[in-house]
Image (cartoon, rainbow, N blue to C red; front, side, top):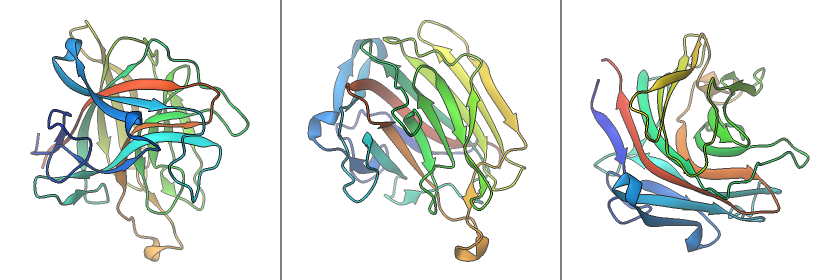
Length: 250
């Protein structure tokens, strides 16, 4: 493994800020939508994320959606960390717990989604890929040329939400805008010792590009974390703990 370029564990006492272990941006309608709380089963501080109906902090877009998210990784020198054609293969670890009150997110006219991790491209509203939780966890992928690609949904071998229990996920991603890309997801549930591979894709683009923008070159993609859903007549609460990025190989 190469060096860890981001290790966010919420122990620094801030949601966003400068330096390592922080996200650079926060998108919420009120401070209580993304808060730090003590978690006994994780022996430390985690982030509590809540989204209510109509929670759209982005007044310029996204009608009929709700969100509470952090975005943008920073290294130890407060420099932004992006994914692009130079990223190679990265190992991303993330932990999530869906509250026991979790209700199934349903289609209200424009599909159903509850994105809790996404890699956002510079040229499209659809992320290059996202992990979404509705009744199950699924991977949504839209890589390659934005002129021809569409969102493809991949169910996991075990996509159960297990409300009230932590799920640890390891994403091993080879970043490419062509079919040399790959995406593997390993999962470990609270109380289980080992990880199980729940998705293994090869020959898939994991970055986006627009042939009409930037000479068709791949731009900088950035991470977002929290919850972004189509609007629902109820609140959704989840908890997140830790987000690590580490290069695999040279």
